[in-house]
Length: 265
Length: 296
Image: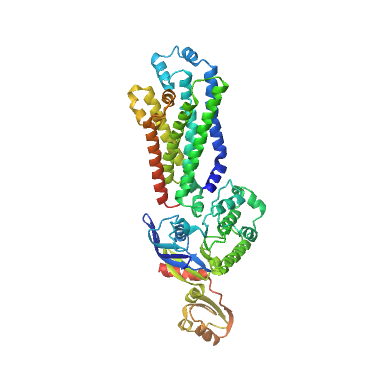
């Protein structure tokens, strides 16, 4: 396990460090934006010629222009979703399909290491990486609020929003790992993983913006990651927790089931 | 107990029958050759032994264990047919990485192997992606052999190695056998198998054609004998016992002999021979004889 972790860290540390820096940097920057710009006034100025329906839609998408709303939106912004999703999907697609594509899995599994242990090492590494990334976001947002004298969202709420973000990204890891267990090339698996994540994001966004498509939110994984409601209620809805844990368990289980049974390479 | 015992092993990939009832065993202290052309099923067999591919039917026992058990691979060194290493790692890091999977078994042969195969520090210090195919092959060999494992599985091990290194490799393999290690050497380079193996199995389209000693295989094969006479070739050569085929053109006769050669030599002694060539049987001849028979 330690050997595999060391290898994964050695190989991916640049990518992981950059993704984490982008993510944490964005969380910090959003504090600067919220503290330094009067966004409600700016939005009112910019949107004064917008049709009322469009103004309503934008407000609904962002969730309001209060400081807490904007900081909560920072955990659901496309930039952070892309940074987290990239880490989850790249790690999952390379865990099996990428190693098969490179021809290295044969040599690794020819060593006295079980497929279960190999699989567990990759899953644990991804979970640890996403946890570190989420905690970096927590640290950046707490630091940003201190630096810019904001008291919009408490540390406990930030941790919960980060936990929700972590569970969402771990779900994408599990789904992509399931695809990876069947695949032979990392590129195709990554593409499929990104496509699913994108479809989920679009379904969630369209469902939020268009009342007639509101039913889509229920069918989007992103619909269960709702930082705004966490910031308001101070807790992750039980339904979201159940869904995330269920999806993670089912897809990791199916991925391991397939991985144990497939012929390598 | 033999380190490796394979009985009735079969495997299909969809409609393709990759292995069909393969049986053989490799004893401790033995270098066992596994011969066959590309696509015969050699690599599939090795992958099943390592638990990489699941057997369709039959049984494989590695030190008495099922290949699905991790314990079966504790004392096995493996070199794949196509050595693909992490390009971003240095040779040294790769050797350490693979050694890390056996924390209780230090890579005590590494220095010896590195020296014998002619690897220099600069080879081991550079990222593998910048190394030649031959150097990568050497690193793969060191990774497979560095633990002095009780069973070595080597798939086409001399691919890309120059003749001097091939010779060093053969000496290393003999050393393994002399220390009681079992070696399964898969190859289609027949001279390589001939020079180090005591027994060989010949595989054709997933089936074992024969398992025999090199000596017995030689005895069973057709050997070519070329004779030039001072005058015309004597008549009736093709009816001499042991001669399977005779091509006679003027004063030159090409004879294919099977088994005891003495009747042929006695008949030739009665003639006036100018030139006589009777080379050592090559495994190629044996191999082709089996294939020709199979094709017929």
